[in-house]
Length: 362
Image 1 (tube, rainbow, N blue to C red):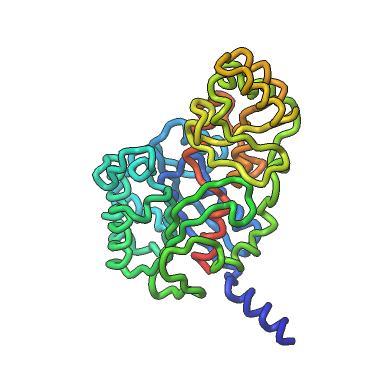
Image 2 (cartoon, rainbow, N blue to C red):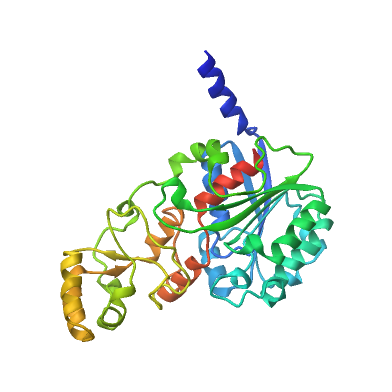
Protein backbone atom coordinates (compact mmCIF):
# COMPACT_ATOMS: atom_id res chain seq x y z
CA UNK A 1 0.00 0.00 0.00
CA UNK A 2 2.81 2.41 0.88
CA UNK A 3 4.38 1.83 -2.53
CA UNK A 4 1.08 2.58 -4.29
CA UNK A 5 0.67 5.75 -2.24
CA UNK A 6 4.15 6.93 -3.21
CA UNK A 7 3.41 6.22 -6.87
CA UNK A 8 0.18 8.19 -6.61
CA UNK A 9 1.98 11.14 -5.05
CA UNK A 10 4.58 11.00 -7.83
CA UNK A 11 1.85 11.16 -10.50
CA UNK A 12 0.17 14.06 -8.71
CA UNK A 13 3.40 16.03 -8.74
CA UNK A 14 3.12 16.48 -12.50
CA UNK A 15 -0.65 16.31 -12.90
CA UNK A 16 -2.47 18.80 -15.09
CA UNK A 17 -6.19 19.28 -15.50
CA UNK A 18 -7.84 17.76 -18.54
CA UNK A 19 -9.28 21.12 -19.56
CA UNK A 20 -5.97 22.97 -19.18
CA UNK A 21 -5.00 24.96 -22.26
CA UNK A 22 -2.38 27.58 -23.00
CA UNK A 23 -1.94 30.31 -25.57
CA UNK A 24 1.69 30.29 -26.73
CA UNK A 25 3.66 33.07 -28.42
CA UNK A 26 6.67 31.50 -30.14
CA UNK A 27 9.44 34.06 -30.63
CA UNK A 28 12.60 33.43 -32.70
CA UNK A 29 10.56 30.50 -33.96
CA UNK A 30 13.08 29.16 -36.51
CA UNK A 31 11.88 25.91 -38.09
CA UNK A 32 9.36 25.29 -35.30
CA UNK A 33 11.20 23.25 -32.69
CA UNK A 34 9.30 24.81 -29.80
CA UNK A 35 5.99 24.23 -31.60
CA UNK A 36 6.87 20.57 -32.08
CA UNK A 37 7.73 20.37 -28.36
CA UNK A 38 4.21 21.53 -27.44
CA UNK A 39 2.76 18.85 -29.72
CA UNK A 40 4.98 16.13 -28.23
CA UNK A 41 3.84 17.07 -24.73
CA UNK A 42 0.23 17.33 -25.85
CA UNK A 43 0.41 13.80 -27.28
CA UNK A 44 1.15 12.25 -23.86
CA UNK A 45 -0.63 14.64 -21.49
CA UNK A 46 -4.18 16.03 -21.09
CA UNK A 47 -3.18 19.56 -21.98
CA UNK A 48 -3.64 21.73 -25.06
CA UNK A 49 -1.42 24.39 -26.60
CA UNK A 50 -2.44 26.95 -29.17
CA UNK A 51 0.36 28.76 -30.98
CA UNK A 52 -1.23 32.20 -31.26
CA UNK A 53 1.66 33.48 -33.36
CA UNK A 54 5.19 32.53 -34.41
CA UNK A 55 7.76 35.22 -35.20
CA UNK A 56 11.12 35.08 -36.94
CA UNK A 57 13.11 37.20 -39.38
CA UNK A 58 14.85 34.35 -41.26
CA UNK A 59 13.26 33.74 -44.66
CA UNK A 60 14.46 30.14 -45.09
CA UNK A 61 13.50 29.06 -41.58
CA UNK A 62 10.10 30.69 -41.98
CA UNK A 63 9.45 28.82 -45.24
CA UNK A 64 10.21 25.53 -43.46
CA UNK A 65 7.98 26.51 -40.52
CA UNK A 66 5.05 27.40 -42.78
CA UNK A 67 5.54 24.21 -44.80
CA UNK A 68 5.00 22.18 -41.60
CA UNK A 69 2.46 24.48 -39.93
CA UNK A 70 0.53 26.23 -42.71
CA UNK A 71 -2.36 27.18 -40.44
CA UNK A 72 -0.34 29.09 -37.83
CA UNK A 73 -0.41 32.89 -37.69
CA UNK A 74 3.20 33.51 -38.68
CA UNK A 75 5.00 36.85 -38.79
CA UNK A 76 8.14 37.34 -40.81
CA UNK A 77 9.60 40.40 -39.17
CA UNK A 78 12.27 41.76 -36.89
CA UNK A 79 11.16 41.26 -33.31
CA UNK A 80 12.40 44.74 -32.40
CA UNK A 81 9.42 46.11 -34.34
CA UNK A 82 6.76 44.31 -32.31
CA UNK A 83 4.59 46.53 -30.10
CA UNK A 84 2.85 45.97 -26.79
CA UNK A 85 -0.50 46.41 -28.51
CA UNK A 86 0.26 43.65 -31.01
CA UNK A 87 1.29 41.19 -28.30
CA UNK A 88 -1.64 41.97 -26.03
CA UNK A 89 -4.06 41.25 -28.87
CA UNK A 90 -2.70 37.70 -28.79
CA UNK A 91 -3.21 37.33 -25.00
CA UNK A 92 -0.34 34.84 -24.56
CA UNK A 93 -0.11 32.70 -21.42
CA UNK A 94 3.34 31.46 -22.41
CA UNK A 95 6.24 32.99 -24.29
CA UNK A 96 8.73 30.46 -25.64
CA UNK A 97 11.88 31.85 -27.21
CA UNK A 98 15.31 30.94 -28.50
CA UNK A 99 17.12 34.27 -29.03
CA UNK A 100 20.17 34.51 -31.33
CA UNK A 101 23.08 32.58 -29.86
CA UNK A 102 25.88 34.28 -31.80
CA UNK A 103 26.56 36.94 -29.13
CA UNK A 104 27.42 34.12 -26.68
CA UNK A 105 29.11 31.36 -28.71
CA UNK A 106 32.72 30.31 -28.22
CA UNK A 107 33.35 30.79 -31.95
CA UNK A 108 31.99 34.35 -31.94
CA UNK A 109 33.33 37.59 -30.54
CA UNK A 110 31.13 37.28 -27.43
CA UNK A 111 29.98 40.87 -27.55
CA UNK A 112 27.00 39.78 -25.47
CA UNK A 113 24.45 42.59 -24.91
CA UNK A 114 26.56 44.92 -27.07
CA UNK A 115 26.02 42.70 -30.10
CA UNK A 116 23.22 44.11 -32.31
CA UNK A 117 21.77 40.59 -32.48
CA UNK A 118 20.92 40.94 -28.77
CA UNK A 119 18.63 43.90 -29.49
CA UNK A 120 15.61 41.67 -30.11
CA UNK A 121 15.93 40.01 -26.69
CA UNK A 122 16.38 43.40 -25.02
CA UNK A 123 13.23 44.62 -26.78
CA UNK A 124 11.22 41.65 -25.48
CA UNK A 125 12.53 42.27 -21.96
CA UNK A 126 11.35 45.88 -22.30
CA UNK A 127 7.86 44.66 -23.30
CA UNK A 128 7.42 41.96 -20.63
CA UNK A 129 6.07 44.33 -17.94
CA UNK A 130 3.29 45.37 -20.32
CA UNK A 131 1.84 41.89 -20.99
CA UNK A 132 -0.72 41.19 -18.22
CA UNK A 133 -1.78 37.79 -19.62
CA UNK A 134 1.74 36.36 -19.43
CA UNK A 135 2.25 33.66 -16.79
CA UNK A 136 5.06 31.46 -18.11
CA UNK A 137 8.35 31.88 -20.01
CA UNK A 138 10.74 29.32 -21.49
CA UNK A 139 14.06 30.48 -22.95
CA UNK A 140 16.74 28.40 -24.69
CA UNK A 141 20.27 29.45 -25.65
CA UNK A 142 23.83 28.16 -25.97
CA UNK A 143 26.20 27.24 -23.18
CA UNK A 144 27.79 30.53 -22.19
CA UNK A 145 24.52 32.41 -21.89
CA UNK A 146 24.48 31.48 -18.19
CA UNK A 147 27.47 33.79 -17.55
CA UNK A 148 26.35 36.60 -19.85
CA UNK A 149 25.18 40.14 -19.24
CA UNK A 150 22.08 39.28 -21.28
CA UNK A 151 21.18 36.54 -18.82
CA UNK A 152 21.62 38.95 -15.91
CA UNK A 153 19.30 41.44 -17.60
CA UNK A 154 16.75 38.70 -18.20
CA UNK A 155 16.74 37.58 -14.57
CA UNK A 156 16.50 41.17 -13.32
CA UNK A 157 13.34 41.67 -15.35
CA UNK A 158 11.89 38.39 -14.07
CA UNK A 159 12.56 39.42 -10.47
CA UNK A 160 11.06 42.86 -10.99
CA UNK A 161 7.92 41.45 -12.61
CA UNK A 162 7.14 38.85 -9.96
CA UNK A 163 8.40 35.70 -11.68
CA UNK A 164 10.32 32.92 -10.04
CA UNK A 165 12.58 30.87 -12.24
CA UNK A 166 14.83 27.87 -12.57
CA UNK A 167 17.90 27.50 -14.77
CA UNK A 168 19.34 24.41 -16.43
CA UNK A 169 22.44 23.49 -18.40
CA UNK A 170 21.59 20.09 -19.77
CA UNK A 171 22.37 17.72 -22.62
CA UNK A 172 20.11 15.18 -24.41
CA UNK A 173 22.81 12.55 -23.91
CA UNK A 174 21.83 12.53 -20.23
CA UNK A 175 18.57 10.82 -21.21
CA UNK A 176 20.30 8.45 -23.65
CA UNK A 177 19.58 10.39 -26.82
CA UNK A 178 22.74 9.73 -28.87
CA UNK A 179 23.46 13.33 -29.81
CA UNK A 180 25.26 15.98 -27.81
CA UNK A 181 23.59 19.39 -27.63
CA UNK A 182 24.49 21.06 -24.34
CA UNK A 183 22.26 24.10 -23.91
CA UNK A 184 21.13 26.68 -21.36
CA UNK A 185 17.45 26.79 -20.47
CA UNK A 186 15.45 29.01 -18.16
CA UNK A 187 11.84 28.43 -17.15
CA UNK A 188 9.88 31.06 -15.25
CA UNK A 189 6.36 31.54 -13.97
CA UNK A 190 4.46 34.06 -11.92
CA UNK A 191 5.06 33.66 -8.20
CA UNK A 192 1.38 33.02 -7.47
CA UNK A 193 1.79 29.74 -9.38
CA UNK A 194 3.92 27.55 -7.10
CA UNK A 195 6.65 25.14 -8.16
CA UNK A 196 5.96 21.55 -7.22
CA UNK A 197 9.72 20.97 -7.08
CA UNK A 198 12.18 23.73 -6.22
CA UNK A 199 15.54 23.65 -7.99
CA UNK A 200 17.80 26.43 -6.70
CA UNK A 201 20.89 27.36 -8.67
CA UNK A 202 21.96 26.20 -12.11
CA UNK A 203 20.89 22.56 -12.57
CA UNK A 204 23.22 20.48 -14.74
CA UNK A 205 21.22 17.27 -15.10
CA UNK A 206 17.66 15.93 -15.24
CA UNK A 207 17.60 14.67 -11.64
CA UNK A 208 14.89 17.12 -10.57
CA UNK A 209 12.82 16.37 -13.67
CA UNK A 210 12.46 12.60 -13.39
CA UNK A 211 8.66 12.63 -13.40
CA UNK A 212 8.62 14.76 -16.54
CA UNK A 213 11.21 12.57 -18.26
CA UNK A 214 9.25 9.43 -17.37
CA UNK A 215 6.03 10.91 -18.73
CA UNK A 216 7.68 11.64 -22.08
CA UNK A 217 9.53 8.31 -22.19
CA UNK A 218 7.34 6.89 -25.01
CA UNK A 219 8.37 9.87 -27.13
CA UNK A 220 12.09 9.51 -26.44
CA UNK A 221 14.13 7.29 -28.69
CA UNK A 222 16.93 5.82 -26.65
CA UNK A 223 20.19 4.05 -27.29
CA UNK A 224 22.12 3.76 -30.50
CA UNK A 225 22.33 5.71 -33.74
CA UNK A 226 20.76 3.14 -36.07
CA UNK A 227 17.18 3.71 -34.98
CA UNK A 228 17.45 7.31 -36.24
CA UNK A 229 18.82 6.41 -39.68
CA UNK A 230 16.94 6.36 -42.95
CA UNK A 231 16.72 3.14 -44.94
CA UNK A 232 18.40 3.03 -48.34
CA UNK A 233 21.56 4.05 -50.13
CA UNK A 234 22.75 7.62 -49.79
CA UNK A 235 25.66 7.84 -52.21
CA UNK A 236 25.13 11.59 -52.64
CA UNK A 237 26.12 12.02 -48.97
CA UNK A 238 29.40 10.09 -49.25
CA UNK A 239 32.52 12.11 -48.38
CA UNK A 240 34.39 12.89 -51.58
CA UNK A 241 38.09 12.82 -52.39
CA UNK A 242 38.60 16.47 -51.46
CA UNK A 243 37.15 16.00 -47.99
CA UNK A 244 38.75 12.63 -47.19
CA UNK A 245 42.08 13.56 -48.71
CA UNK A 246 42.43 16.69 -46.60
CA UNK A 247 40.32 16.26 -43.48
CA UNK A 248 40.29 12.53 -42.72
CA UNK A 249 42.23 12.90 -39.47
CA UNK A 250 39.90 15.46 -37.88
CA UNK A 251 36.58 13.77 -38.63
CA UNK A 252 34.41 12.56 -35.76
CA UNK A 253 33.35 9.11 -36.95
CA UNK A 254 30.46 7.09 -35.53
CA UNK A 255 28.76 3.88 -36.69
CA UNK A 256 25.26 2.46 -36.52
CA UNK A 257 25.85 0.98 -33.05
CA UNK A 258 27.32 4.16 -31.57
CA UNK A 259 25.50 5.69 -28.61
CA UNK A 260 26.88 9.19 -29.18
CA UNK A 261 27.35 11.78 -31.89
CA UNK A 262 28.68 15.32 -31.87
CA UNK A 263 26.49 18.40 -31.92
CA UNK A 264 25.44 19.26 -35.47
CA UNK A 265 26.05 22.94 -36.18
CA UNK A 266 24.89 25.22 -38.96
CA UNK A 267 28.26 24.68 -40.72
CA UNK A 268 27.78 20.92 -41.07
CA UNK A 269 28.67 19.78 -44.56
CA UNK A 270 30.84 22.85 -45.20
CA UNK A 271 33.44 22.56 -42.42
CA UNK A 272 34.59 19.31 -40.93
CA UNK A 273 35.98 19.89 -37.44
CA UNK A 274 33.56 20.32 -34.58
CA UNK A 275 30.48 20.64 -36.80
CA UNK A 276 29.00 17.16 -36.34
CA UNK A 277 29.77 13.47 -36.80
CA UNK A 278 29.99 11.40 -39.99
CA UNK A 279 28.69 7.86 -40.36
CA UNK A 280 30.91 4.80 -40.98
CA UNK A 281 28.90 2.37 -43.14
CA UNK A 282 31.33 -0.39 -44.19
CA UNK A 283 34.85 -1.84 -43.89
CA UNK A 284 37.45 -2.03 -41.14
CA UNK A 285 38.06 1.45 -39.76
CA UNK A 286 41.44 0.74 -38.17
CA UNK A 287 42.79 -1.09 -41.21
CA UNK A 288 41.69 1.60 -43.63
CA UNK A 289 43.17 4.38 -41.52
CA UNK A 290 46.37 2.38 -41.20
CA UNK A 291 46.70 2.38 -45.00
CA UNK A 292 45.83 6.06 -45.10
CA UNK A 293 48.66 6.81 -42.66
CA UNK A 294 51.08 5.05 -44.99
CA UNK A 295 49.87 7.30 -47.81
CA UNK A 296 51.15 10.35 -45.96
CA UNK A 297 50.04 13.59 -47.59
CA UNK A 298 49.05 12.03 -50.90
CA UNK A 299 45.35 12.99 -50.97
CA UNK A 300 44.46 10.59 -53.79
CA UNK A 301 46.02 7.62 -51.99
CA UNK A 302 44.38 8.60 -48.71
CA UNK A 303 41.04 8.67 -50.50
CA UNK A 304 41.66 5.26 -52.09
CA UNK A 305 42.43 3.80 -48.68
CA UNK A 306 39.38 5.29 -46.98
CA UNK A 307 36.66 5.09 -49.61
CA UNK A 308 36.00 1.45 -48.64
CA UNK A 309 34.56 2.77 -45.34
CA UNK A 310 31.69 4.54 -47.11
CA UNK A 311 31.93 7.46 -44.74
CA UNK A 312 28.97 9.75 -45.27
CA UNK A 313 27.25 12.78 -43.86
CA UNK A 314 24.06 12.31 -41.88
CA UNK A 315 21.07 13.36 -43.94
CA UNK A 316 19.00 16.37 -42.80
CA UNK A 317 16.13 13.99 -41.99
CA UNK A 318 18.40 11.88 -39.76
CA UNK A 319 19.60 14.98 -37.93
CA UNK A 320 16.02 16.16 -37.46
CA UNK A 321 15.20 12.77 -35.90
CA UNK A 322 18.15 13.06 -33.50
CA UNK A 323 16.83 16.50 -32.53
CA UNK A 324 13.45 14.99 -31.67
CA UNK A 325 11.46 16.23 -34.65
CA UNK A 326 8.63 13.83 -35.57
CA UNK A 327 8.40 11.67 -38.68
CA UNK A 328 5.86 14.14 -40.09
CA UNK A 329 8.47 16.94 -40.19
CA UNK A 330 9.72 17.76 -43.68
CA UNK A 331 11.38 20.42 -45.79
CA UNK A 332 9.99 22.25 -48.82
CA UNK A 333 11.43 20.74 -52.00
CA UNK A 334 13.17 23.97 -52.95
CA UNK A 335 15.19 24.06 -49.71
CA UNK A 336 18.82 23.22 -50.48
CA UNK A 337 20.87 20.74 -48.48
CA UNK A 338 23.03 23.60 -47.20
CA UNK A 339 19.91 25.47 -46.00
CA UNK A 340 18.58 22.36 -44.31
CA UNK A 341 21.82 21.79 -42.40
CA UNK A 342 22.03 25.45 -41.45
CA UNK A 343 18.50 25.71 -40.08
CA UNK A 344 18.80 22.42 -38.19
CA UNK A 345 22.09 23.62 -36.71
CA UNK A 346 20.30 26.72 -35.45
CA UNK A 347 17.44 24.69 -33.98
CA UNK A 348 17.02 22.87 -30.67
CA UNK A 349 16.24 19.49 -29.15
CA UNK A 350 12.47 19.08 -29.21
CA UNK A 351 12.34 16.41 -26.51
CA UNK A 352 14.36 18.41 -23.98
CA UNK A 353 12.12 21.44 -24.50
CA UNK A 354 9.01 19.26 -24.05
CA UNK A 355 10.38 17.93 -20.74
CA UNK A 356 11.10 21.45 -19.48
CA UNK A 357 7.72 22.72 -20.66
CA UNK A 358 6.04 19.91 -18.74
CA UNK A 359 8.05 20.88 -15.67
CA UNK A 360 7.09 24.53 -16.15
CA UNK A 361 3.31 24.00 -16.23
CA UNK A 362 3.21 21.21 -13.62
